Length: 69
Image (tube, rainbow, N blue to C red):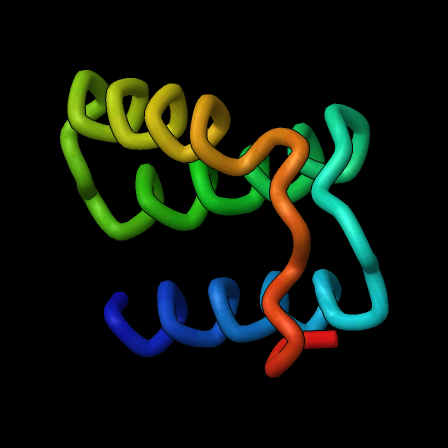
């Protein structure tokens, strides 16, 4: 379970590489993957919803870290 979550999150970080900014379209795809990974790891739905909402609010319009791109 933890390995699957780690693998999925690692793939998301690789996906973000090469992108200069986080946009509405690419954040939706990434958050969908995070949501599914957390739910499959048996994280409670209210916790997942709250986490996704907070990440989305903070992520939109931000630049991707230089260490990722």
